[in-house]
Length: 178
Image 1 (spheres, one colour):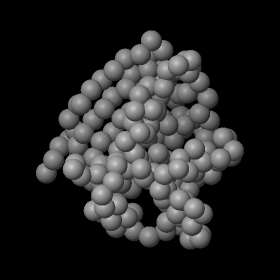
Image 2 (image 1 turned 120 degrees about the vertical axis):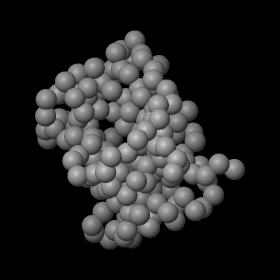
Image 3 (image 1 turned 180 degrees about the horizontal axis):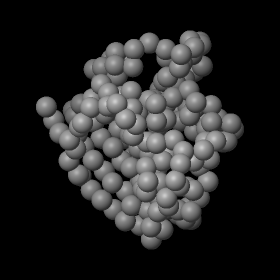
Image 4 (image 1 turned 90 degrees about the vertical axis):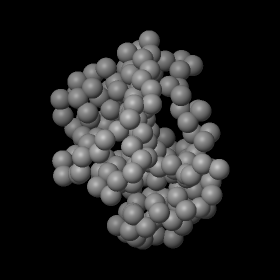
């Protein structure tokens, strides 16, 4: 059996923002197309664990009315401990220890659903195995950057690049094995 991988599956603008100021994600609407999920269904079928930052979790629940990944073991990375709710764990310990613990267990892949603070904390520790980044054909000019300064350089290998009718380009990278 293949080892579990930690995969970031996320969308950003061409200039690298995952949200405009005030957590505005309206630019994602420009690539909405009936019947097109950009491979998300196939991706999520191979995931049994989700890692997400508290701000992103709160935003999703506020926008959608519920957490869409509640059928999977979920870790909300937060500074404030809170009791678990079914499959949802509020985690305030070491992110590195959590990832090593999850990777040591048998299971499907681990999905990092953001936000940028979590992605960059994982990058600083070189814990991300793959990136699937959907680039939206828009320059937002400002907002929350996907990749922040202050992390080490990491070489990646391109697995695939797909373009879609909407102008979205999806890049799939894997980190080089050590």
